[in-house]
Length: 440
Image 1 (cartoon, helix red, strand yellow):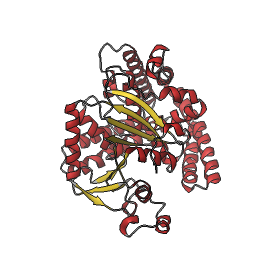
Image 2 (cartoon, one colour; image 1 turned 180 degrees about the vertical axis):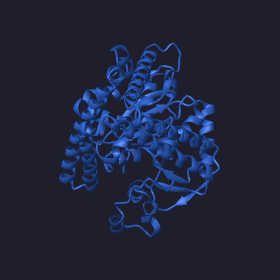
Image 3 (cartoon, rainbow, N blue to C red; image 1 turned 90 degrees about the horizontal axis):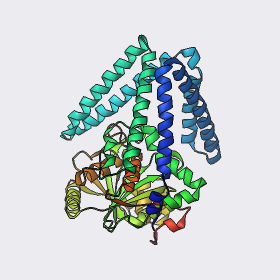
Image 4 (cartoon, rainbow, N blue to C red; image 1 turned 180 degrees about the horizontal axis):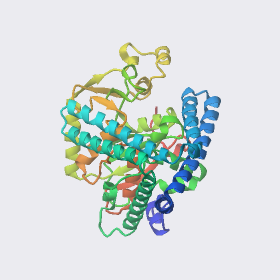
């Protein structure tokens, strides 16, 4: 009996237990916000103050210990937030409305940039992003109105939002445990949690694996749950420190990994949020081992079965993608590379990858992938748009698209006996048995 069957027989999985607990927390918090908006708002700020203070201290410790400048800068920023949170009684509950309004305006700006980028590349999806940006801007204006008139309404609004989240989680859990042929993950059309919580979900699970190795063994289910073969593999990358916590997303077909991102270091703009979009291909197993051993990241893998028609569609889409691309050489290969030259460029990820795995890079002449944008045209949207075109059950979340969204989706779809997600596993250098027998 494989691990999947054991989990189905022994009750709720670890993911289900986590979601059940989270749903109850959201429900209680939502009721508190609805009934006592002023008190609950102050409580949220005091909790955030304590959490941000602890986070700042941890980042300071890691920054000094490992001499990481970025961790020290993050610690300074979080300390400023902590001071703001601790002073909530002096500032007043009205600050809730103001911060919420700024969040909505920020989201509106991100969507507007995405829409304008799409329109520039003559993509029809651009107008929908612009329209959504206008909606968020109007909501931000509404939050500012509350800021000046009745801030308790903002607390009640937050309560309603939390209760909707709790209801969504409970409905999903019920449907997953009582399948009856329904494609239960279609509830992803609902709203999702704040992007930060979703984005770091894989990293949180890795921390559980560190403390409870048995849970890692239960998660690793490489034996297919049915007789279908795996012909597409999707990977959600994660880690325990820094940017790795927010992850990356790739997919592999016929032994080749496809990854989209911002890999031209000399052309990065606005703290790496903008840059030329680059696609690289590399032998999948070698790439996974390189990520784990040299880049110190960990990967969650999901094996999918595509029908013959879906495979043909995937091949057609890949041909279209490469038709608008051209080969690009990383700085290391602008001249004949040697070990001494590699040392000079070792801090450049594209150079490290090309040197150790033989990856091939491609830039785009035109199209929506020509420009990388961390909050829009990013790695997870590249993979998810392609997957959505070959399987419309794989949804594209609204708003900011993160790999964590798909970690949650594939983990839940694996539990559905009717889904085409038929294996799940993970890869880590700390567990050599999870790596592939491929030389680097």
